Length: 190
Length: 124
Image (cartoon, rainbow over all chains, first blue to last red):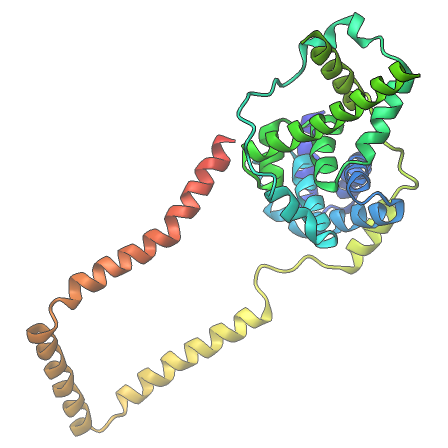
């Protein structure tokens, strides 16, 4: 699979339109979802996705494969998002890197089947809350969980220090935890 | 503590189970139409050739002028050049190490941050 993508990239670099069309087909959904998560508007997200691939075509001869092709596309998308939302870049930089504790890559609790049995209502409530987070947190959360990038890959994609990425994700989860506490309190009260 | 872990698990579950939204429509045709009208920028443009031609013309003009100077004027220029060089050797020798270290500092300032960034990117 990876080899096929590699050969498609090589053919597209040499100007093969069909190969590039196949790459667009393969990756457009992921790029669209990232853009949608940040701009929260379908039409604008489609427009950003299209612009990402047009720019990728222009810059493709410079792609040397140091990162994954998809990660490279995300970098283009986030740069376009920075142009659309001028405050996004600043709000990411302002996160700082004050989270000193090491974040686990995956929670071991998640693999516990007992823990997995949670009501659909709570999950839906949290997923709505994720959509209502600030745009910088939405971007970090989307890259980490929807697109399954490691902290290092996110740092490289957004050109941010690793500590800032960890801080942003930690704070986003903290906000979700506060909302969850409020939900649980409302259940107790009723 | 148990409540905290349970909440973490619920949040992780919500984060990881969020589905990708479906594409409202495929954008492949639109992208390909735009690509076919937008050609990739060439590595060398006409501007580069124009600039190269102007620079070469300047060197050519300089060489032609030097070749066609009257011999007396040429000799005077050579004498002035020698005098300037002697003056430099006597009065401004300090300029040699100053220029050397200055150039080294400028080069270091230009390259070290770039090399550091490349090293960091490589480690990532």
